[in-house]
Image 1: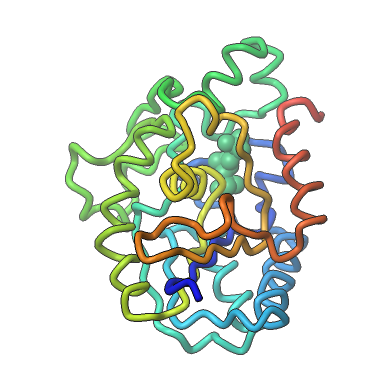
Image 2 (image 1 turned 90 degrees about the horizontal axis):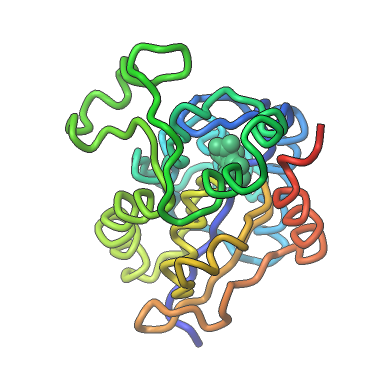
Length: 251
Ligand code: DG2
C-alpha cells in the first residue's frame, strides 16, 4: 500500500473562465456551473472514500470556495485549512483581464502559445496600480517586495510553489493525513510537473480540467505510484481537458 494520499483539485469554472478571459491573480468568483462542479468534486471524493484530513488552498476566492463546497459535500467541512499565496494561480502579467480569443487573433498562435504554455516565457509585466494589478491588495502585503510577481512563466511558479510543497504539504503527508490541495490550472501544472518529473517541453501539453479531483498515491520517495495520477471521473476529465486546450479558439 502506498504511504501517501494526495488529491489535487482545480477550482470549478470561474466567471472569467466562462468569459474566456486571462485571470491570473485577479480574484474572480465561481459561477453557478463552477459551484456545481465543486459540489460534484466533493461527492466524487465521498464516493471514492477519499476523505481529506487537511486542506491547502491559494489566497484566491475561486479555490477557497471550491474547497469549502467540495468538503461540505463530503461532510469534511470541519478539517483544518492552510492557505498560501504560493498556491495562487500563475500571475498572468499584462494579459490579466484580456480576452483569450482576441489575444490569439491579435498576436498570432505562436506568441499566444508561448505566453500561455511555454515553460519560460512570461507575458509582459503588469504595471502596479492599474486596474487588474494586485499591488495594493492587503492579502499580499506580507510577501517580500522582491518576491511579489508582476508576471510569471510556469518556471517562476515552480520556483515559488515548491517551498510550500516541501514546508507546508509534505509534513502533512508524512503524518499519514489524506491531503487535499485546491488550487489553479497553472499552479497545479507546476506541482504535477514536479511530481511526475515532466520535462520543460512536455509540460506544455498538459492541461488540468476544472472541478475534477485528481488522486495521487505517492510512494515513500513521494513519486506517483501511477504516473499522472487518476482522475476520479476520467471520462469527464478527458472531455474537459480538450476544452481547456482549445480555449483561445472559441469565441
Ligand atoms: C486560468 C488558466 O487560471 O488559464 O488564469 O486564466 O485555473 O485560475 O482559472 P485558473 C487563468 P490558462 O493558462 O489555461 O489559459
